[in-house]
Amino acid sequence: MAEATNFIEQIVESDLESGKVTVIQTRFPPEPNGYLHIGHAKSMFVNFGTALKYGGKCNLFFDDTNPSKEKTEFVDAIRADIRWLGYEWARECYASDFFDTIYEYAEKLIMDGKAFVCDLSAEEIKNTRGTLTEPGQESPYRNRSVEENLRLFREMKAGKYADGEKCLRAKIDMASPNVNMRDPVIYRILHMSHHRTGDKWCIYPMYDYAHPICDYLQGVTHSLCTLEFEDHRPLYDWVGINLGFDPKPRQIEFARLNITNLVMSKRYLKKLVEEGSVHGWDDPRMPTLAGLRNRGVPAAAIRDFCERAGVTKANSECEIGYFEAVIRDYLNARAPRAMAVLDPLKLVITNYEGGEDVDFDVNPLEPETGTRKVHFSGELYIDRSDFSLDPPPKYHRLKLGGNVRLKSAYIIRADEAVKDENGNVVEVRCTYFPESRSGSDTSGIKAKGVIHWVDASTAVDAVVKQYDHLLNDADYAGQDFNERLNRDSEHLFSAKAEPYLAEVPEGSDFQLLRVGYYKTCRDGDKLCLSEVVSLKDNFNK
Image 1 (cartoon, rainbow, N blue to C red):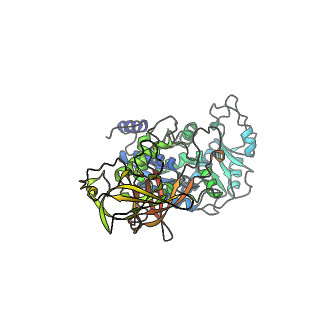
Image 2: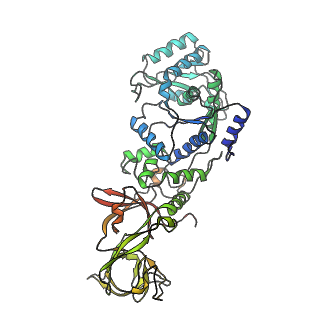
Image 3: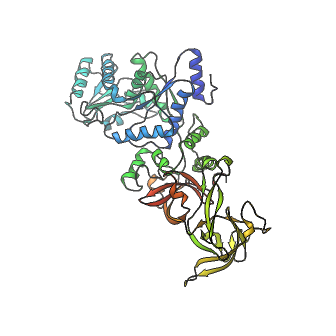
């Protein structure tokens, strides 16, 4: 048996060793009311990963008990996200698959005297629920006869009553120290078409009631969910025990994934989309899996991050810098290298004629990837920040009279800066040293700095997209998302790139030397370079 690495796996191993269960069955249970985000990736890692590790199965279970918020669009997106992340489910099922059985179980509770139809409004139920220190008040409808409850519940199902006019409540204990056990609502009236069942139903089960039933009907052995459901576990168990489930699934809670600077709420993510604050659910700034995929974050890097974050019992918050560091580590080891200049400045080598191809390392960390050819000529573009007329101390880039190496090419010396009528440098004229070519340097000339470049004669125009975080940093504790929203989080630049970047398949990830990690994409017929993660590692600081 595989060695347990967290408390959930310890429980699973104990259940297997004792013979309590023979095959592990879990389920990943998203509600199709939005796109999945990075927090759901951890739930996938736990549910799919635990089943896989112990030779079990994991179902994809759609919790579609609230038709007012659910769409087929979200179902399709969830399927695509799971497969992109590298998981495959044993069985796809929906709460709506079990609506008939869930209803029959509700009638059983009524006949056993454990559920009643209540005429109180949602507000009245809330006001009579009690507090953490005071018991709740029993509903005046709590002691209706079984016959009357059955008749009223069937009339609810038949559509006789308006939304909110009646509900079905479990009859448990209004003095329970756990507020969730104080006669919770288990069915409500909702005259709304369902994305799968259409208009068949006008009453829908509440999640806390449907959850244990659906788990049981799927054969789930371990219902793994996030920590906010810990207080709901007594109700989960009550439903299973009172409906005679044998074996009854076991609910285990783990800490959800929280990351600074990221919106981890589907409700607010939906608001950002609907209000036009982002370009859609797959905007590269969004923490949705669709957004991360569109940004160019590899699925394997997300899985690696979830594994490193670990599975714990206590909630905590992870720094966004750590998430970015994991992505950066993954891409640094695997991404090919390329060159692009974000703020182009013309560089003319006055003593160079013609052109040639120089050898450029595809990825120096993977020697087996070898080299590729990059065209070099006497007219290049360098980044404006790599030249200074008034350099600070220890400046190792290009300055008048100073030497610098052009990556994979030659050492050059800056001789002259050409300015326009406003005094802005528009061209730098240089001398190159023929014997200083990379790989065969016999010049003896020293250059402390190395800068990147692109050949002017073959360079292609590119739009570079850079992103800041959607939320300002964690120092804004207590403020809501609207107050923390960074409304200047997308920046566009006109750049020059080597033509190789326009020739590779769209969606390829690269390290742009000295710039960052970028994904190639197209905007019509124009090359776009979209930032995945910066080159600078703030987390280690």
